[in-house]
Length: 184
Ligand code: HEM
Image (tube, rainbow, N blue to C red):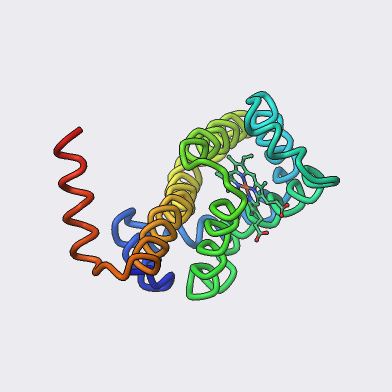
């Protein structure tokens, strides 16, 4: 039942129409991406810190916020470089980022607003520095691809865990979920 990250990446590239133009635009602006990454990280963790539940998660272990700011910078920069031209390594990395959040116990409802913060803050920066619409579009697409990976990991981990524990087939599980939704 678990998705295959490379295949999922290919599907998302098609669904978001993330084409060569977007990729070359991002690569051409990779140095700029790295330049603004730390400031974006500050906005991101300030936003998370304003929510009581997320603030508690962030401060659960010593030095977590500091470490997270560094991993954020790497993550943000990788959206521009594409690691291996948005190939297998990129997909594997994004899949693992999703798994980390499931493992740490962050509820999926926090993920979309968090990514919206990135899109908003980077949007303000693009406007202030009179960057192109092409860059704005390309960044919007790759942020949504990364978001789709994190969201998908939640449902995949939950489904895989239920199937493993119960021995149910994927078809039976799907039927039960559909039936459950009908009765709500
Ligand atoms: C757009 C959404 C998000 C992105 C792109 C993102 C990015 C990342 C990245 C790149 C990592 C490092 C993964 C690794 O170690 O391989 C990470 C870990 C983590 N993130 Fe997020 N994150 C997001 C949302 C959130 C939210 C909403 C929270 C809530 C507090 C959060 C808290 C954490 C924590 C606690 C870890 C693990 C830190 C550790 O290793 O101690 N993240 N995140």
